Image (cartoon, rainbow, N blue to C red; front, side, top):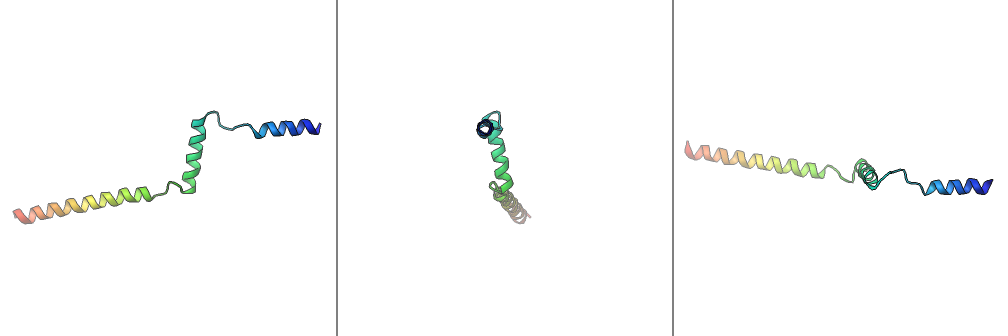
Amino acid sequence: MALEARAAHAGLALACSYSNSAEFDAALIAARRAAGAYGPRRHRRHLLAAAAGFVAGLAVLLLAIHLFA
C-alpha cells in the first residue's frame, strides 16, 4: 500500500501543469515581470528620449523664430 502511494506521488512529481511550451513561457515571463526582471528602466529610457526630442524640437523652433523675427 505504501509503495503504491509513493509510486503515485512520484508520478505526480513528473507531471507538468502547462499544456504546452507557450503556456510555460508566458507564465515564466509573467513571474519574471512580477519579480522586476523586466523593470521600468526601458520605460525611463523611452521617456527620456522623448523628452530630449521635445526639448531639441522646441530649441530649433525658438531659434527659427528668433532668426526670422
